[in-house]
Amino acid sequence: MTIPEPTDAARLLATYGSPLYVYDLRRVRAALADLRSSLPQGAHVLYSLKANPHVDLVRELLAGGCRAELSSTGELRTALAAGADPATCFYTGPGKTAEELRTAIAAGVRTFSTESLVDLRRVARVARESGQEVDCVLRVNGAEAPGSAGMRMTGDASQFGTDAVVLAERGEELRDADLKGARLVGFHFFPLTNAADEASLVAEMTASIRTAAALAEQLALDITVLDLGGGFGAPFAQTGDRPRYPGLRKALAAELDRHFPRWADGGVEVLFESGRHLVGDSGTLLCTVSDVKDSRDTRFAVLDTGINHLGGLSGIGRLLPLSAVPLAVPTEPTDEATHDAQGDAPDDAPVELGTDAAATPPARTRLVGPLCTPADTLGRGAVDLPDLAVGQRLAIPNVGAYGATASLLGFLSRPAAAEVVVDGPGSAESPRVVSATRLTLVREPVPARTTDPTEHPEPRENHVSEESAMQERTMTAVPVRDAEGGPWNADYVTVLRSVLPRLGEDVGPDTSLRAAGLDSLALVELLVRLEEAYAVAIPDDDLGPESFATAGSLWSVVESVRTA
Image 1 (spheres, one colour):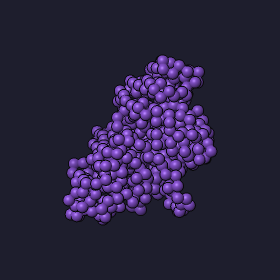
Image 2 (cartoon, rainbow, N blue to C red; image 1 turned 90 degrees about the vertical axis):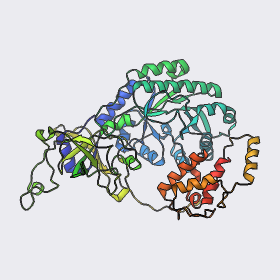
Image 3 (cartoon, one colour; image 1 turned 180 degrees about the horizontal axis):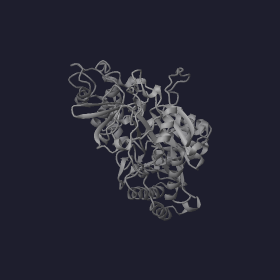
């Protein structure tokens, strides 16, 4: 963990204002060197831009030999601006559209992780239509989940990848698929993120190697690419240091030797992904106390930063612990900065936290932001801090990953925090400023489509035998109607009412869901409850506004998925 020296923090705040992200490229280089020393020699490191797509951080990691792992055309533009070779980029994600695939392939991207047979076919079709052939790996949801982590990605029911057992059962279908335009070259695993310890990483990655070897044999695939994912940890918004993994290299090399002996001479390219581990401890958020107040035995410190700058996931109830470090920022008194017309210090004058103040007994304080919502709380519960005063500067450490761009940037239209990138000593041994920028949201016109979006309909997978399909068609030929006259069963209206209490007594196919109070938040809740009630997963392509217009239109979507 590195927090800017008080004098450097004061200089940067005076120059660029508060709140302010500071990213130190020296920490990025150190993290990459540490990670490389932990991985099998010859393996390649992919930087996951979702952790922090700041172009200067991306450029630094590319210069250090990383490749870019992308999940959007926006990340692709950033990677290219930072100097990435598109042919080495690795394009991932569970919901890739034909439009973004065309953009990526036209830009020169040639390797894609595919999450299902539908996704694989879509990549192949778009590549074929573009006159190209691309490499594809299958993302696998392994059967084992031996490690502990901050968040599991696979190893359980998941929207990511295809279950290993399903892949093994559908080998013939996979071989018979029309994949002209795509070469199936390997497997992609990413079972967990922010692993709790080295043992968890070793357990997960060695299990992934074993699964890959078994699938390669079952599917008769010649594997030349094996992406073992990541999960390398880092503290977030708390003091602490990056974990080290001294035993990982030896354990993984032994397992690779056992199952993929060609990997050592380059016959199988081994990839690892990392985001937070590479950039997490490079970033610090500097901010200022705007107000301090006590309410019903609770002390609140209102900061000039909130979930629009950091920790936007708290807006959906995912609160993480957070710590803040008071800075002993020296101030340079001036008539304007320290005195008002009566000679008193103004309310918002920065105050210096001396040794005595820092040593005062800590008080339990809730850190909250400036937004007009009770959701604008930084961290879970109160934290121990010395008595704070208006104008006090604070540093929130280890926020180089999932900070600015993972927050509610557009909420309440407040400006984003400035982001300053520093590197190496400059004048008087202070860090040299590489860049100072601020993210902005820009509304731009959307031209009407010039082609029919249904011109290339996506093929629907057939998961049922002909016999069971005939039985389902027979069952749905005479739809069950509930007492309210809709073409659905009684449970459907019960689910609707659980989310939309304003729904009227008589619910029919033309009943408007918007009129019953369906907004964006209720839509998500309703979708989750319907999928749970009917044990289905409704594809994103079926989630347009027209699907949620009426009770009948939504039921049509549910029924089509049930009977597919």
